[in-house]
Amino acid sequence: MSAAAILSVLRPSPGSLESCLHQTPGRFSAPETVDHVPSRVLLDKPYPENLPTVECCAECNAGLSLDEEYVACLIDCVLAGSVAVDDVGRSKVRAALKRKRALTERISASRSQTPAGIVWHPELDRVRSVVVALARGHSLYELHEPQFDEPTEVSVAPLPTMSAVEGDQFEVSVGYGGWPEVGSRAFQRSVLGVSGPTSPWLSVQPGRYRYLAALDDGITIKMVLSEYLACEVRWS
Ligand SMILES: [Zn+2]
Image (cartoon, rainbow, N blue to C red; front, side, top):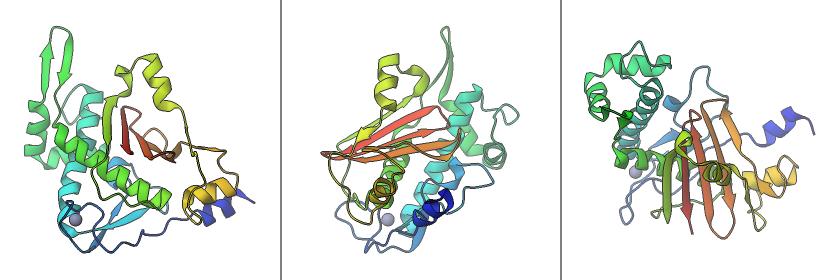
């Protein structure tokens, strides 16, 4: 099968849900809009074709959009060591920092100069909500496993702060440990021979976003944003 044919078989379609994927547990919200997974603010133009989308309510979508923008800007500022518009690398982040003074000030307030160098104290609840939302999207889209509950584990760490052993453990593919649901993308990849017996890292945009979705005795989603922020979310 040609690469084009494989891509066509794997072509994303919106996950269809009866309720918002990101709703607070115990509270029902109807799906009203779609959210890209990953959000386009985490990617550069031109965007990859056929970005997956998941259904969510307008309230979650609006809240998430602000948090996603915060995380995108934060990462680029940390990489630049600065919140100055001219210092950051991504044009999308430069535009957001120019447009939103309050956002720039919030990120700036989390930066402190210490004798050991610049240290950032990000708003971890906002980072966490973005990471969990991304993981929910990947779980639904890739594994056909909607996760409405809070995850069992969430870890977020800059790749450069990991030890060699931690980095190796993070990068290793995760075994399926079972056969994925028939029709799910994980199943298609497995059947088509795109992946072996383990879940592969999938690159959405080189240098900007890659992820891995695995079913073993639970669900493991790993993501790397801008080859800087390593995130792992697990539902046992
Ligand atoms: Zn919602």
